[in-house]
Image 1 (cartoon, rainbow, N blue to C red):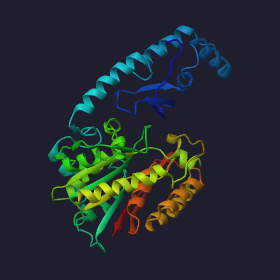
Image 2 (image 1 turned 90 degrees about the vertical axis):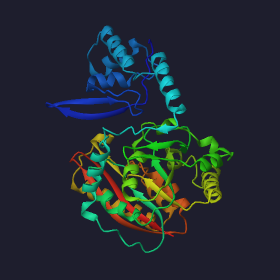
Image 3 (image 1 turned 135 degrees about the vertical axis):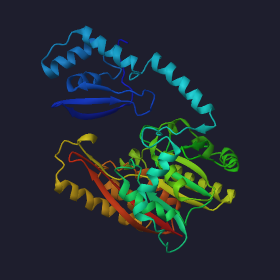
Image 4 (image 1 turned 30 degrees about the horizontal axis):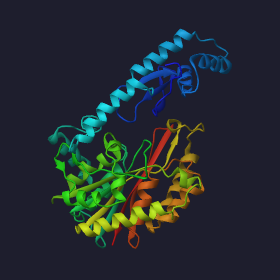
Length: 398
C-alpha cells in the first residue's frame, strides 16, 4: 500500500489518564473494534488520502512537527490500519462484498443494536421500557387525528426526557402503516435510501407490507432509491422500533427511509424546490395513496451537535449553550408551523454550523405533512460539559 487511503471513519477525541487520544472507529459497522491513537499518529493517519506516498507522509509529518519518523513506523501503522479494515483496498473490498451479499440477500434486517444500545432479551427490554415510561403512564388526549411524530434518535439514556413525553402520543394515534424517516450518519448515493425489508427487534419482527414493496418496485422513480446497505447498522430508525412496539397494541407495518445529506442545498448548489425533491415527495404520496392504508409519518431526528466531540474548538460554556438553545427555538417554530422551507432556511442561514443532523428527515417530514398543524411537546439539550446534542419531540395533527 504505497499510497494508503483512509476510509470514511469516525474520529472521536477523548482523554485517558491525562493523555489526549483519538478514537478511530468504523461508522459502517464493518469493523466492530476501534483503534485508540495519539494525536501525532492521528495526524499521520489524516495524511493517508490516497495521493501521498509513505515518504510524502514522512516529509509532511517532519514539516508539521519537526520530528523525524522512521519509514518502518509508518509502514507498521499502514499495516495495522489495513488489517483493521480502516483503509480502502483489496482486503476491505473483499470483506465488505461478503457482508453486502449476505445482508442484501436476507429478507429481514436484524437488530444491530440489541445487546449494545438496548437489551437483547425480550423481557429485559420490556422491563426497561416499562420503567422509561412509568412517569408518563397517562395517554395524552390529542387535539385531532395524529398525522406524524417528531422524535429524537439519540440513545435512550440521554434522550429519556423527550422519548418519555412524545411516544405516549402513539398509544391512541398509531396507524396501520408508519413511514419512518431517519438520518443516515454516513455518505449515501442519494437523498433517500428506502428499505423494503422486515425489521427485527427483540420484541418481534415488524413487516414491510408485500403490497407496498410491489408498489415501490413498480414506481420508476422510487425503485431507484431502494438501497438496503445503509440500513444495516444505522441507529436512527432502529431506536424508534422498540418504542413504537411498546406503545402500539395493533399490528402495523413500516416503511423505513434513511435520508442523506443536504449539504449541496445548504451550500447553494441546489435549491429545495428542485425536481428531485418535488418528485420524491409526489411519488411517495402517490404510492401511499395507492396502498390505501392510513399512515403516520415519523422522523427520528436530533438537532444541534456542538462541542469538542464534533470538532469545535471553542469552550462549551453556558453562553454557548444558551445561544444554541435560542437558535433551536427559532427552528422549532418553523416545525410548529409545518413550514419546511422556513425550517431549511433557518439551518442554511447559519451554514449548518451546529450540524443539524435531523435536517433532511425533518425537511421531508414537513413536506409530506403540509397542511397539518403541530405542537412541540418536549425539548432537551444534553451536555457533558464539553459537547452537546439537542433534540425535541413534536406531534402533528391533521
